[in-house]
Length: 272
View 1 (cartoon, helix red, strand yellow):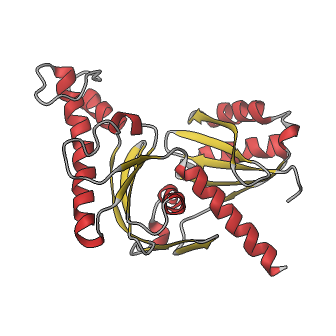
View 2 (tube, one colour; view 1 turned 135 degrees about the vertical axis):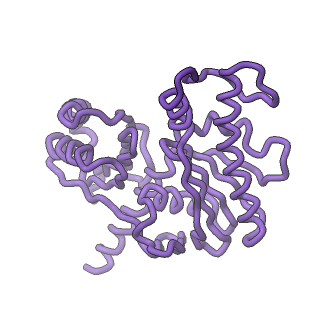
């Protein structure tokens, strides 16, 4: 990589595209952004307009992972090609990641079936907190709760509708319930608080139940909380319980993509 080159890192999620640059010193840089998924032509135009003319970025390569629809991927790829003249290297899940002292084994029955966003979030969490048991919660369009043993094995995880999906399902699937704007309380006495308490309580119940089951087999874990709805859950996770400490982490998927790209580049250089 040339001295001033950057990598463009792309996380194409179910609801939005998130992107960031890797700076020449190997870190996520201050240049970053997001765009909600929409009509492909509009996405391509918006992203190409955002990125075009950024010659000072000196983008040398583009790496990403995607769970979005194929049309969204095509829109993103077209924007990257228009802005930088580059293809996108889309990563998939893998049986094992090893690079720079970070080791993670994929314990899924079929390792390639694991959501690629989950896999890269787990890589980043393992890098941030090596050699200890982790429960990694990503609160996005879906809420995922995944366990990593102290010796670096992903042992399994759960998937549930995310916070917004739960609110939307009640508003869409019932005649009289609103898209609630309440708060989590112990004994709700109005519909907005009742819905909010049910939705957030369901999310917390999943997290707490998984964490307790994980602890029985793998020891007390650090709970790593990330994702767009993490702020809705963070004040309540573990409140009044014996759950482990909670750490908030941002951009786990993008950080995992960066580590994966660095591993790929190192392997290519070693073969030369």
